[in-house]
Length: 105
Image (cartoon, rainbow, N blue to C red; front, side, top):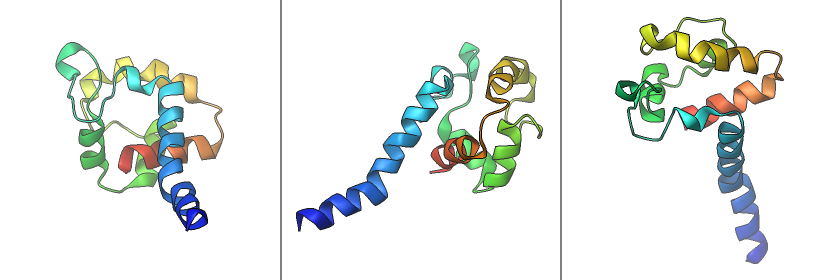
């Protein structure tokens, strides 16, 4: 039974924590939060808004994170996101996929 619980944790729960750690490590959590829309404060849209805007379109979100697609939310605030996207340039494909998975969860 313990083995089954451990397997479920590793397969389902642990990846979410790993994705969240990467989200924080890359500095994303400084501007984007679960449900708080902070655009009025000069920060980014909530994760819930991002999820709704991309509606499961992971590849489009990845292209945006790579700086190869236009923003779907608050294009007038894009200048604040551009330096962060520049920092992500050169990352491995897995990083973009992991970030997108976290945002679309």
